[in-house]
Length: 296
View 1 (spheres, rainbow, N blue to C red):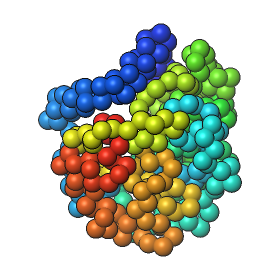
View 2 (cartoon, rainbow, N blue to C red):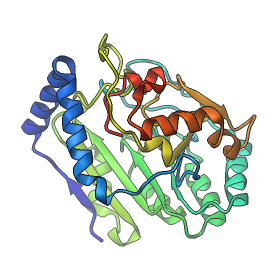
View 3 (tube, helix red, strand yellow):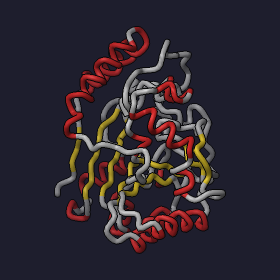
View 4 (tube, helix red, strand yellow):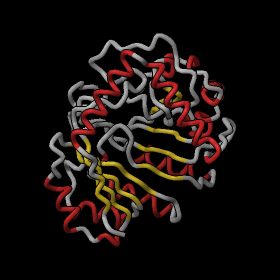
């Protein structure tokens, strides 16, 4: 399978970001109607979620830090909310894997969330440990490519990673040096690799109002379904389980894996209450969802 390069038109991408920001600020419920139209059109093809069922995707941040300074992201170094020393202990990592093994987990793994996984030099060994326990699971990772090169990409894939997505953030849409090395020299038969050219300074959404430097506030919550907390659980470096990936600064903590099991956290009354409410399009169920302008 050849390495896929997703290269949108730069001018169009900038214009799209400006239009999205204008609509979100001035006409937020036009965005809500558009999302609802999209969702309704796709609804017949989507799985039906049950708040009483187990998650089928887990994201693990073995390091909760990002080394990029994108203006749209709450995890950016611009906002200084993340620490370079925020590493998950190996003991906690193995506790997560062992709990998943005990419940015969059959879902997917993401070795990323609101972080840069390659800041943790142990990530290759951690993926290998997970692959030894879950030989048939699907493993994916997003990276900004700053620390990447052909050798590291090869190590990731040979350690057990199935899919590597590289978000190449550059306002001129130029490939970073290490990303170019991957694109030109990596053996495409090692795994599924996709490179996406992304603008570093562009508007995407306010992500539960956590895209900082803004006083944006929705006049009322969107009446719009959100499925993500019904299939995905996230564990950050210190064991905290935030509500979802949009909660980059962990304001809504659902539990901590150091103190509870994943099962206890996932099936807690509060987590189930929020999941059920979101399936019923009730984003007023908590203060983060009430300010979220994402489709999922």
